[in-house]
Amino acid sequence: MKIVWIEDDADTISPVVRPLKDASHEIEVIRTVREALEKVELIRGCDLILLDIIMPIGTGPAGAEERWGGLTLLRQLREEHHIDKPVVVFSVVSNEHVLEQLRDLGVADIVRKPVLPSQLKQRVEAAWADWQHRREENG
Amino acid sequence: MVTPYQPTTTEDMAVTLLEVFTSITGTPVTLFLRNEERVLPSLGGNYIGFCRWIRGNPEGLALCQQDHRRQALESNLSGPVLCHAGLWGYAAPIKLGGRPIGAFLAGGVRLIGEHYEKQSLARLDALANRLHLSERERLRSLFSQVPELSPAELASKVRDNLSRIQRWYQSSLDDRAALEDGTQKITHEFQIRLQGLLARSENLASDLVELLRTTNKPRILVDAEELVREHQRWAMLIQNLGGGDGLGHYDFRQYDIGRILRQAKELFDSEAEAKGVTIELVGSIDVSLEMSPDHISQAVNNLVQNAVKYSFRGVPGQRERQIRIVGEKHPDGFKITIRNYGIGILPHEYENIFQRGYRGALTRDEYRTGSGLGLAVAKEIVERHGGNISVRSWRQGADDDPNPPYLTRFVITLPYEQPTRRRVP
Image (tube, rainbow over all chains, first blue to last red; front, side):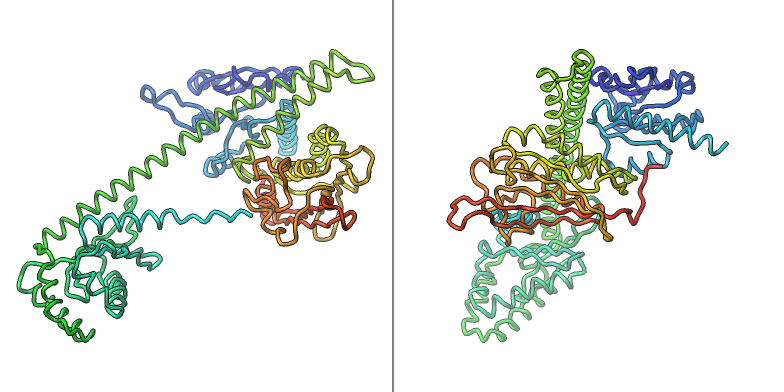
């Protein structure tokens, strides 16, 4: 499976995806919202998106930050770029309002940090299997 | 026994502000909170001589207190108001964050102008009659010493003081919001660092498994696995600090309770072993329940951790040194029983023990550590699942044992299905 991992703290927490890599999943890391918008075609070509939600947007006025940059990005990917790939949110998120919006955007799973790498692998693979199963059912 | 914290800070703060206002102006002041129909008056220690003299008479004091309430309720929340003793005050509406919450009544002055003076003197006479005051001249004399202001001056004085208080209150709200934002950022940073640590430790353990595949586990491999568990236990503590919501949203789905019970046993096996205690897992545990797995795992882990912590040290193999985790299917739900021997809980503490920060009366020095949050978090989580949690504890051993073990049993009952499905699509 080809996974795009959108995560601004990837350097700090990269060991968490090692079991996924060891299981021969290909992981492409994108570190900012801006980079993600520049690489829309790469994202379109992947099998699954692993997405952090708390990221600076980085496209506003200098120094401006928006806490839920990942959410804004996901909305753009879904609504403007029509990318309907399965998304596993991997983040520190407990804000009910944000969670509601994530559900509305049809995310496959929400995995809260911190988690053991083996658990992340299991959740990502389960989300992928479930998505494939549903796609087959829907023809 | 710890008394649960009862927050009264807001009311204390409001009364303090009223006292500050009164001590500056020497006049009575009342805060009326509209949504609760509550009236908070200042206490009167700093009132002007006229008010103090009236309040020295028991009936005068009662009339004064009734009048605070009447003024607050009848003042229509804005404009001049006349008190029962003939003094004028001014009612100003209070808004917090743009929302009207009540009125602030202050003043206690004579207003300049024949129209106002006439009304004042009528009230003063009525009061003197009501109280059968013989010292009418004394009352009039004190009344004449009350400061005089024009209606515009009174309104502006009250509004200026009120604005200062509102500005101060708003800035304290801003400070609190900034503090909460700062705390959120620190928590986030904490979680990220913890994520890195957890990942590296589990990966190290996996490396060692690959490197050292033998029939007997080398010590270094056991150490590595324990390092992973230590980090998990640390993560548990951090998550308990956030209460039942410390793990974020409740993600309800079908999950095997057996996996959670096995993981809890593995997580605390080594700590139990170090005390000469064993953890035994029995019953029909491979049952699928609708639950938020991370949360139920946190609740079960907290109970197992407590069972280990409060077990007496002992010799392995003794029945009294076993912790038993039992899973049972019942018609009314799945029942998890966690039983241990050690420090007990007295019957009158069965409810209190689930309060944050509560420590049982039987706990002693070596058992007094810990966050005091585990049981409160467990109860919150179980109840969010529509389940319940209870405890019973029985004294064991000889009657003359000065330090007897107690058999303590925590029982969690969880429904098989959730009434409101809140699955992630």
